[in-house]
Amino acid sequence: MTTTLITGANKGLGKETARQLIAADHTVYLGARDEGRGRAAADELGARFVRLDVTDDASVDAAAAVIDAAGGLDVLINNAGIEGRLPGNGILAPADTTADDVRAMFETNVFGVVRVTHAFLPLLEQSAAPVIVNLSSGLASLTGLSTPDSPTHFYPGVAYPTSKAAVNAITIQFAKAYPGIRINAVEPGFTNTDLNGGTGIQTVEQGAAIIVRMAQTPQDGPTGTFVSAHGALPW
Ligand SMILES: NC(=O)c1ccc[n+]([C@@H]2O[C@H](COP(=O)([O-])OP(=O)(O)OC[C@H]3O[C@@H](n4cnc5c(N)ncnc54)[C@H](OP(=O)(O)O)[C@@H]3O)[C@@H](O)[C@H]2O)c1
Image (cartoon, rainbow, N blue to C red; front, side, top):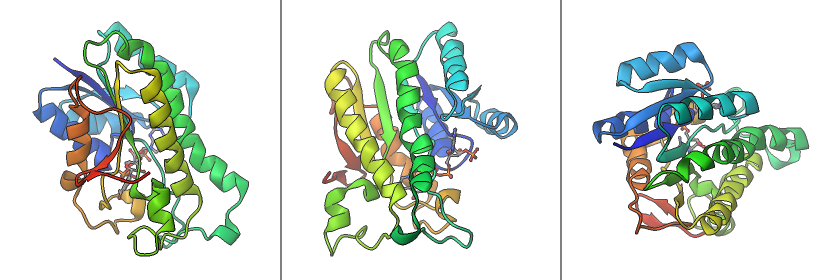
């Protein structure tokens, strides 16, 4: 039996990933920062709720202790994330972006990934088939952002793409340091969730498919890659 933790799984892609991995016989810990919404989602899906705010050391350490005591962890999915849309669904322009805006984005999307990974690495190292999936974005691709005919070239925001580019670098560095763990960054595609005010064009079922596939990466499978449902993406 494979035991999997998904951060930020009370809704959106994380919740749908939980649903699909439970169908694939994983024991899923559904991480959420809000106990009421997290428990409701876990009960609906047949997952185990664990309270986990990726910006809070104490909650992450407590979640690791709970999962360790219950038998350990095989798969970590660093899914919790924010895009920081403005009221009306706008995106902060470069001229209006402050250091505090970028810091707030990094606290969840970047430091959160490092905080959770650091806390759960000792558990993953005890697994026979450990896997980490980091939720990146097509907007992490410096090639895409800088290529005029790329679908991501138009995106005006600074903080979100920068945070996901950092997630990609984190993925590479941890993959090199832990060759026994399959560690990959995933772009789920532009998916209709609260993150983008419901503007995404895919369903969560479609978006979660690549997350679910990479969560099941075999021990002779890829590590240190950046992939979407359509294959490898340029960094
Ligand atoms: N949707 C897309 O088109 C798209 C494209 C590329 C990448 N992604 C990435 O996919 C991941 C999931 O996004 P989504 O679209 O499913 O968004 P979503 O529906 O807004 O879900 C985001 C989840 O992250 C949680 N979260 C935020 N801050 C947290 C914190 N400090 N601690 C714990 N959980 C926290 C949210 O919890 P609350 O309910 O408590 O806020 C929510 O459960 C994100 O990393 C996102 O960047 C999404």
